[in-house]
Structure formats: C-alpha cells, structure tokens
Image (cartoon, rainbow, N blue to C red; front, side):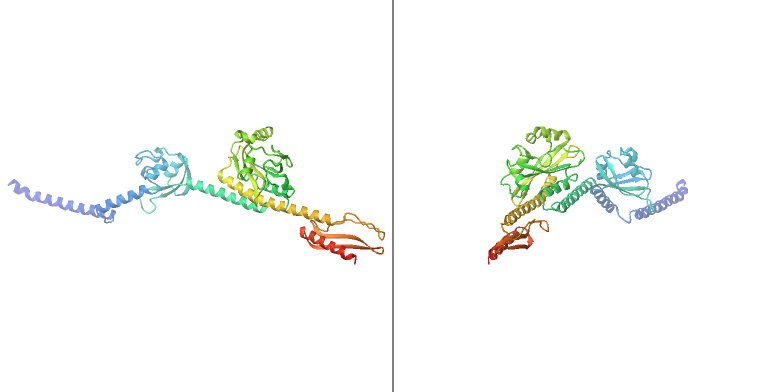
Length: 427
C-alpha cells in the first residue's frame, strides 16, 4: 500500500529528471555545436593535430598572452628565440626570465609593428596585436622573426655598394691627365680613407721616362705618390722621389715576381718586409700601421710598379674580398699609368725628332742680318719650322712652315717638307 501511494511521486520525479537531463543535454549540445562550428570529435581531433603541427613547425615564433599577463601558448620557435624555460604556459611574462625591454613589449596592451629588439645575441622583429578588438578574449598575440641574418646581409649589401661607388669614382678620377706622376697621385687619393689609411705608389725608374722596364726584379724604384688620412701630421714612409730597390724577401718583391697581390695581416711579424729597411719599418710600426696589401701594377703584359695599401691598427685587416677590390683599383690605375707612359715616350720621341730637324745654327751669308727664336703657338709638339737658305747671287730664302696636327706624325711630315724645300730651293 505504501508503494502504491509513493509510486506516482516516484514516476513524476523520474519523469522530471529525464526532462531536465534531456533539456540540459540539448542546451549543452547546441552550445558545443555553436562553439565547434558543427564539428564532430573526430574532426576536432584532426584539426587540433593539424594546427598543432603547423604552429610548432613554422620558422616564426608565436606567443599568446592572456589578459592577466600570463603566457597561454608558446610554440617551439618562440621558445628557441627567447630561450624560454620548460613548460612556460601559465606563468607571468615577467617571470619567464626575459630581458626587461622584451617583456615590456609582450606584456604591454598595445599594437607593435616590426619593432626590432635585441635578445641575447639575436635581433628580433616583434609584431604584437590585441585579441579583444572583435569581441575575442582579452590578451594579445605576438609573432617573432629572427632578423640577425637579414641585418648581416643588409650590412654586406651596404659594403658592396660602397665598394662599387669606390670603383666608379676611381674610373672617373684616375687618369684625368697623361702625366705618370699625376696619375699615381690620383690612385693614392681615391683609395685613402675609403679603402686604406695610407697609400704609396712605387714605379720603376724607366716608367717615368716613358720606357718599358724589362724586368722589375732588382730594378730601382721611385716613390711616385704618398697619401694618408693625416695630411698635416706627416707619415712614416719614404718621401716622394726617393729611389730604392726591394729586397727579395719583401712582399713587394714576391708580388712582382708572381704577379699577384700579397697580404700582410700583422706587420710586426712580417720579417721579410722588415728586412727591407729595419730602421724605416720600425718607424712604420711605431706609427701604428698594422696591415698591408701590395698589388703589382700590370698593364698590357708590362709590369710598371707596385701600389701599397696600408691600414692602421684601429681598423680590421684586409679581407679576401677587399684584396680583389685592391686588384681592381690597381688594374684600372695601371692602364692609365701605361697610357701616360706611352704618351710620354711618344712625346719625347716627337720632341727629339723635331729638334733634330730644326736648324741648329744659322748659315753664313752676307745678304741679311738674321736672328730667330722658336716659340710654338700651342703646347705640345707640332709641325712648325723655319729655315734660312743661302742662294746664288747674294740672295737668301726665308721659310716659315706649318703642318696641321701634333705629335710624331706632324714632326715627321715637317721633316719631309723641309727636305723638299731645301732640294727645290736650288732650282
């Protein structure tokens, strides 16, 4: 009887529980479907695995920081770049052992775009975005990129650009005249400060006269140019005009014999270079000169001399790429010096020929009192000449001639015309 009386209450309670459980399950399922966008558990697991694999395989650090300043997530790249401790999730950003300026950026609730920060021995480009702008949870997402290599590449690009600018300036500023000494000075001037602290140029003695040195080994050299970063404070090198010879153990002698540049990173240990002139080389070292690159000046198969690039101890020694730049400078300057040498030789030959063809003394004659002065109207060797030719019958022929042009060809033409005038004057 008791059970019969309690049965309706029991059935009602069970029914109400079922209704409540069904309604609660429906509400929870509806909310889950809305939050998971209708994905079933298998699809959810597959998507999580995919996102997790992508997150930890990208070469960019990702950090998610909650609104309370605690780290929610950090991928493997972020842990490597920031050297995070194991299992950093859930800890405050200020407790992760980060450098203060890095922690300030990650914890600050502000947007950051490509801000470069130093973290240990790395340069990190950081971007930070807030997550609650479109109704999302409070916090921020930061991405990190290691820009150390990019900065190094950018620095190398700047160096390459400066070297190209130096080569361009050398092509414009070296060889502006056909004077051997001036061309050597231009080579020294263009390389000082931008490439070397001091530059010395040594040419074989015959080169200044326009001749070709048969071999530079043991040939006397003449200091043609010296330039430095301290023009008012002097230098420890041989002065311009000094004549000397390189000893066989010197790097200049090795460069001349091999036709290749020679590098001395530390002159204090370069015994072969010090043997050139112990007293003078001691002055160079005491002055603070540290390293040397010597490059032979070669043009059209002819060795003309050497150019020496010197650096003080405050600068780094010459690198391999800089040695190739020194060769480029020397090659261009050698062609200009060789052009000046060949012009000097041709000019000397033309002057000698012209002077040999001009009358050296006035002939004896009684018709006129004659005086002369030879003064070319323009610089250089031309085809101008004059003659006083005695003729029969107390007569005198006065001749003034001019051949168009200058140089060796004009002088030779002048000689032929002068001979023709002498031959036909007897007629």
